Amino acid sequence: MEFKENKMSILKLNVSFAFPPAKDGVTYLSSPDESGKDTGGIMVDPTLATLLDKAIMSIQAVEQYAIKINEGKANEEQTVKASLQISHHDDLLHLTPDEPEQEI
Image 1 (cartoon, rainbow, N blue to C red):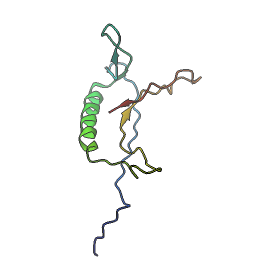
Image 2: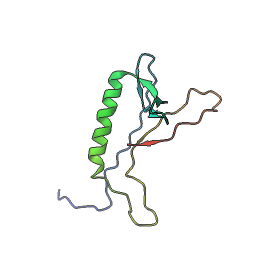
Image 3: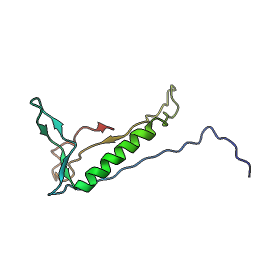
Image 4: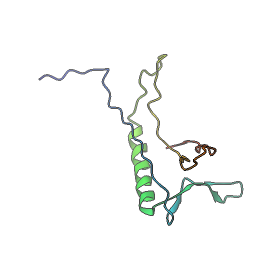
């Protein structure tokens, strides 16, 4: 079988995981307030925090090879994107909005 380059074919990677908080975890995705004290974030298992840090570094390393689908055209897709977000699905009344996405 002869290989023919198909300019329409791409490898598209989509990943979505949800991790529960850990009571005895470490704070993840916190940010400093005006005084420099870390606020917000979510408690996660310490091992998970380490693995997330490694995953983020790997994502940043492969991002340089990514392209936007149909770049420069009217139907351009934002396919070069990676982010983390704290979601408040435990709010039964849905009064607490999800936190803003943080780009990786």
